[in-house]
Image 1: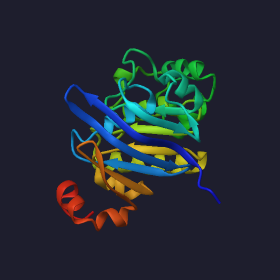
Image 2: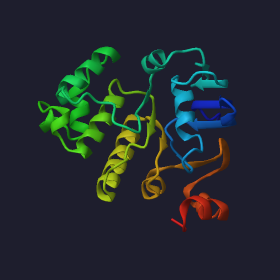
Image 3: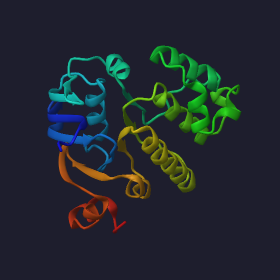
Image 4: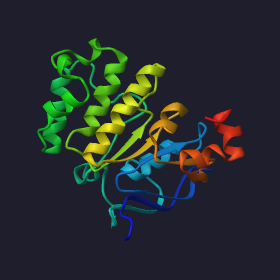
Length: 236
C-alpha cells in the first residue's frame, strides 16, 4: 500500500543575499506522523517552516500537500486548505479576551469549533480574560489553540514550548500528542527542548547549515555520533 504524504518539499532552496538558508532540502512527512525538526540556530528550521506555510519569498523547489502542488498558494489559501502554523513568539493580541481571539480565527476559518478547542487545551476557565492577563504558559496554549481552529490537517509548529518550564513543556507536548492522534493531524515540530522532541516525535529530521544531516526514528538519531556530539551534547 502506498504511503500517503501529508506535506512534501522537494529541492527546497532559499537564498538570503549571498547566504543560502536552504540548500536543496527534501522532506516528506506521512499522514498522521509527528516529525521533529532539530538543529542549531541558523540551520534553516524556521526558513523551512516559512517555505512550507507560504510565508517565504524568493525560494525554489516544490511543495505538495496530499500530493497536490501548493507552491503558488498564499499562506491564507494554504490555511483554508488545512495547513496551519504557530510561531516562535506568540501570535496573540494582548488586549483581546481568549474567546474573542478564537472566535475571530473561527470566522476566518469558517469552522465554529471554539468551545471544543478551549476544552481540549484547558482554556475554558480563561475565556473572558484578556490575553495580557493570563500566564505565559496559558498564552502559549492560546497560540496553539489559534493554530488548531478549524481542525487543520497539517500543523507546523515553530518552538511551541519556548519559554516554558520543563513540566509545562512536557505537559503541552503530551497533550498535543494525544490531541493529534485523536484528530489525525500531521505535525512538523521545530523545538529546542530535546526531551520534548524525543518523547513525542515518530521521526526526527536534523538540519545543518541549510541541508539535511540525518533523518530517522528517535532511537536511530540517538545512535548517530555526529548528531549527538554537535546537537544533543549527550545521548537523550
